Length: 135
Image (cartoon, rainbow, N blue to C red; front, side, top):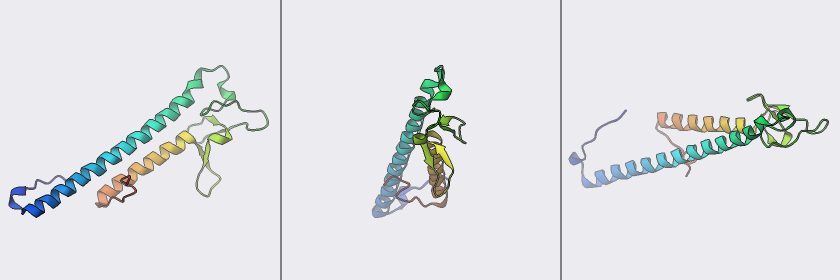
């Protein structure tokens, strides 16, 4: 949906307005790309931190996310429905108003997907909310 506009046929004030909009669009896009890049980096860091102990001898007796030892009676850990890793109670994020939960990595990944979809939908509708643009 790219249009070519010949600025020569416009008045100088109209040219300035169009250029301001284009600069603002470029700034919003770069802010959004930077925010998505940061989210991906955080997610990779969480995955990396969780996979550090994968080669441990007793990997099933510690949390897949923070590597804390899991107990036999207290804080035994539970399996995340998103990634099937065993995580401790501190590495769980409960979903809004439900008993369902995800581990920190799965939760951040789902948030990243939701935010990207919001931006795509906003661009399709021609509306980009300030909070989506990171402003």
